[in-house]
Length: 425
Image: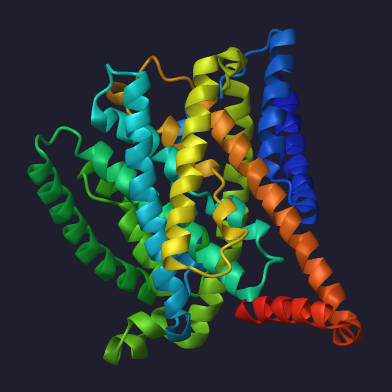
């Protein structure tokens, strides 16, 4: 393919993705759907002109950078304040239990349809389908009430971080025999990585705040990628290093004490945070755009006419939302809509599917299941948010016409119920 045509194509995709993001904020229709459909259309166009661009080989590198940026962006979103503790522990509990129960349940469903699979193989396939996409959730919940918005941001962030870490811990220790040995290997690996990451994160931040030159971000992004890659070679949980770096940058006043807090200057750290936040958001936007489009281009459309794909997908959705409703009812208890219906699958699911090692891949599994899950969870989320926006508008109208509610007992009691529900948020 002509290099200029290839560059034109890349630029058009980026511009298109930007405007779909704006459209998504106004309509609550997730941009992921539009980008995947764009990928499907581009694939048909390339097949028509008999063009086969060789960019799939760069997906692994793009995936590594994408995972680093997503974990870093998620860590920068986690503000650990004392007053946020009730939201933090509830959202973390729901994210962790939802990931555990959903992935195990989906694994058994896969084993029922594919009895030749091993449980760990089924779990590796189920995990990506059990992770909520914070990349879709965060921009979608900005019009919700303060409590609901913060809860969903925390839950989506925790789901991303926990899901990615658990996936790679299992994949990297798959050769360990026995659950006890596996637990010891993962626990020791995590403890060692956590210890190293705390020291490295502090040293990196101390150095970066004292550098006066230009292009500091990409210098230390290179250092982070280097640390991640070296950690992978030594079979460490490298994403913990990225996570601790982001948490320390965002919450240095909370996580540091004594001399450590004195050595990191608040003004410089705030400037660094703003710079990192801006560029991680921009880089994550690029990664999301190309991965969703490439996923659409690699999607075998024939798999969508398989009854097996739709049956597995429907069972997955029933289990996912059933478990989610139970967890919210047990932990959150009050005013749980539309949060229960907001659990979209997205970039993380696609990235982890591409990251499944060859020795764990199962020929019988069809990628159409992933597409249907992304499509269905995004549509359900969009419907829930549109219904919530409509209900909120009706509430605002009722508050504006409060005098009418005072004139009759029935309408007054109804108005009171709406007001109490509003105050709970």
